[in-house]
Length: 431
Image (cartoon, rainbow, N blue to C red; front, side, top):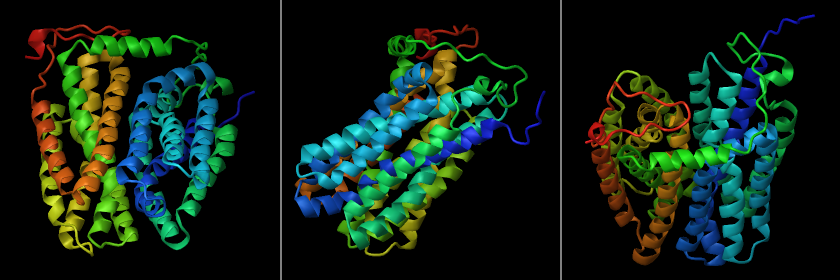
C-alpha cells in the first residue's frame, strides 16, 4: 500500500541541516564578541586569545575533508550529534577556565572539531544523498546558513555580553547546541533508502551504500594528485588569502578594532551581522554570474575590489557608523563568500569528478589563511597598539590574489576526465 506524501522528507532533512549549520556559524562567530571581555578579565594578550581562534579556524578547515568519510562510515545523524555535543562542551567549559591553555582546548580544539564536522562536507553529503532536482538551490541555501548564523547570533551575544557578561553568552551557545541535538536525532535521517524512497526528484530508490573505510584514503589520494598541478596551488593560495581577509581578520578583529575607535561593541557587532545579511545576496548573485562569466575573471574582480576596500577601511573607523562605513559593510558582505561559486567551478573544470574533494582541500587552505591572520592581527595590535598595518597588509594580499586568479588558464577541451581521480592538467594547459 502506498501513501501520497505532500512534502518529500528530503525537505525536512534540509531544514534540520540548515538549523545545524546556522548554529555552527553562530558558534564560530562567538569569539568576535568575547575577545575584549576575556582580555579585560584575564589580562591575556590578544595574540594569545587569537591563537585559540586560529586553532578553531584551522581545525574547522582541516576537519572538512574527513567529515564525509566519518558520515559514510557512521551516518550523518551520529556525526552531527557528536559534533554538536563537542561544541556544547567547548563553549560551556570556558566558564570554568583559569588559564589560557584551557581556552585553546575549549574554543580551539573542541569547538573547531565540532563546527568543522558541520561544514562543506555536511552540505555536500546531505544534498548528494537526498536531492536530484534542486540540488544546486539547496546547496546555495545551506551554504547561506553560515551567513544567517552570523546574522542571528552576533547581535544577541553582543547584547548579552554587555548586559550580563561573557559567561552567560558562552552558556547560551552551549545551550543552543544541546537544544539542536534532539532535533537532529529525531529528524535528520541518514539516507532516503531508510524510508524506502528515492531522493527528491529521483525515480528509483538508491540503495544505501555499505559502510566503507576508504573515503579518507581517497581524500588523501585526491590531495596528492592535485598537489602536482599548478592550478591547485594558485587556487589554494588565492583561497588562503580569502580566508585571511574574511574569517581571520574581519570576522575576528573588526569588532575589537571598532571598539578601539570608541564604537560600542553592540554597534560593531550589528555591523558585522549586516555583513552576514548581504553575504546571502552576494553568494546567490555570484552563483548566477559564475554560470555566465569566466570564473577566473570573477575571482580577479572580487579579490581586487576587496583589496581596495581594505586599504580604505582604517580611515572609516569612528565612534559612530557613518555612511562610508555602511557602504563598506554592504560591499564587504556582498563580496564575503562570493569567491566560493567560481572556485568550486574551477575545481570541477581542472579536476573533473574529483573536483568536490579537491575543493575540500582548497577550503582547508582558506582556513589555514584565516587561522594565520587571526593570530597575526592580534600580534600586530599587541605590538603597535593599532590594527592599521593589518588592514594594509590584507589589502595588498587581496590584490595579489587577484593577480593569482588571472594566472589561471583554461583547460584544453580535448581532455578526458576520470571519475575516480583528479585530472592532472598538462603543463601547456596552464602556462
